[in-house]
Length: 143
Image (cartoon, rainbow, N blue to C red; front, top):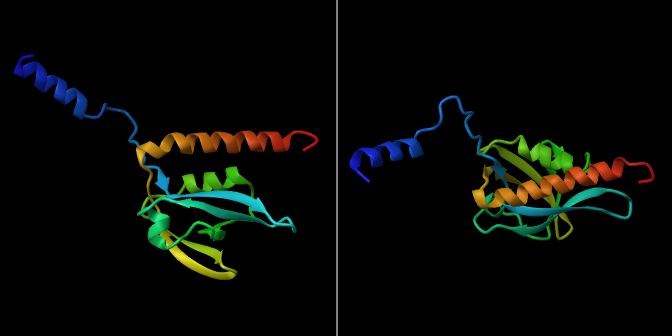
């Protein structure tokens, strides 16, 4: 391949396509949560896992913590899809106050939203789809 062809190929691979919308970085918390309801029907988010050195770990969250609220989202509001849509609207660098319970004591930490690694996007997309399907099932008569 001659130098002119290499330069043209390099230019094609590095210059964004004109008119293409910019890719918005996806927000990332660096933790896995599961929603639960207690015996009274109170909904909360249980921290299942934390990504080492991720935003949640940096904020001081631990597996086993119970999240009562994250920013303006209260765990008692809506369903899993509502929570995921709230997260999707956050911006990397945004700071969220997390109210939580650890070992029976309430406390709060501030979490700085990170940028989702590309490797995490398939899991995010699968989680969104499961939440959408769960909402559809919950809206069917008899549920």
